[in-house]
Amino acid sequence: MTLRIAEIFGPTIQGEGALIGAPTVFVRAGGCDYRCAWCDSLHAVESRFRNEWAPMTAAEVWARVTALSGGRPLTVSLSGGNPAIQDFAPLIAMGKAEGYRFALETQGSVAQDWFAALDMLILSPKPPSSGEVVDWVRFDACVTAADTAAAVMKIVIFDEADYLWAREAAERHPDLPLYLQPGNHTPPPPEEEDATIDMDGVLARMEWLVERTLADGWFRPRILPQLHVLIWGNKRGV
Ligand SMILES: C[S@@+](CC[C@H](N)C(=O)[O-])C[C@H]1O[C@@H](n2cnc3c(N)ncnc32)[C@H](O)[C@@H]1O
Ligand SMILES: Nc1nc2[nH]cc(C(=O)O)c2c(=O)[nH]1
Ligand code: SF4
Ligand SMILES: [Mg+2]
Image 1 (tube, helix red, strand yellow):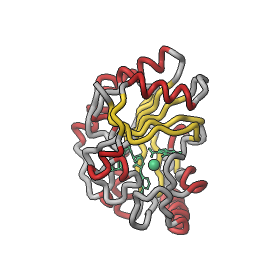
Image 2 (cartoon, protein in one colour):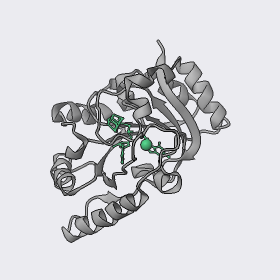
Image 3 (cartoon, protein in one colour):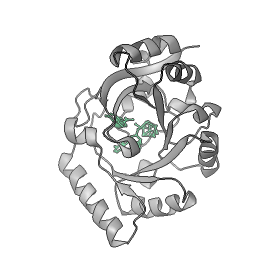
Image 4 (cartoon, protein in one colour):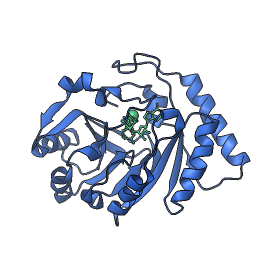
């Protein structure tokens, strides 16, 4: 069995959510069951990039991760596309045997038994601006599959409708640590290697989101920008 891998890069810092600032190596899976209107990783989503996704065995992926990390254990971030539509159990087992930790980013549309082997499951249900509709039965199955692994919720917000949606979505899982992040708009074509970013828009949405949340007296979420976007824009491989 091989994995479809769009890119493996790092070490860099985790730019988002609960592990923000933590050194990490990314393994980005190719292929996704969603088509979010504002996806900033289209090169790992759309079929027209399939020929750029390398078929790799878990052992080959693992060799690359250990080379990039110099054999020093850190947290490996599995992202995509949706990494949950492939089988990462063998890779996670290899890495854990050498003292590495694993975090996985998914929208919560496909649950896997092996989520329980993760150190952190980051669930990012999609708000109205994405154009996708969350199936909460499937989402809840992901939370259940995480079992004793730490699960967190991270919601991208572009506008008022997303914010109001996030308030309701968060209520469904009151026990999950909650992170809000402003969306970035990458002017077309977003899949370019060094696509520019609407940095002014990102910062304006961050400021608005902080003020909106605090004005509501909603003190549960942590509100964070995408740190890697502030540093590098939407550059690939960082
Ligand atoms: C590219 S996705 C891959 C993992 C998985 N498909 C998911 O959506 O959770 C990784 C993270 O980036 C976020 N993201 C994607 N496009 C974004 C954008 N334009 N602005 C802010 N966050 C974005 C997603 O919501 C998700 O939390
Ligand atoms: N540095 C960095 N942090 C990230 N956090 C989530 C990312 C992703 O695209 O999944 C990402 C990414 O691509 N780079
Ligand atoms: S679910 Fe994630 S990878 Fe898939 S299109 Fe949406 S943001 Fe992009
Ligand atoms: Mg990203």
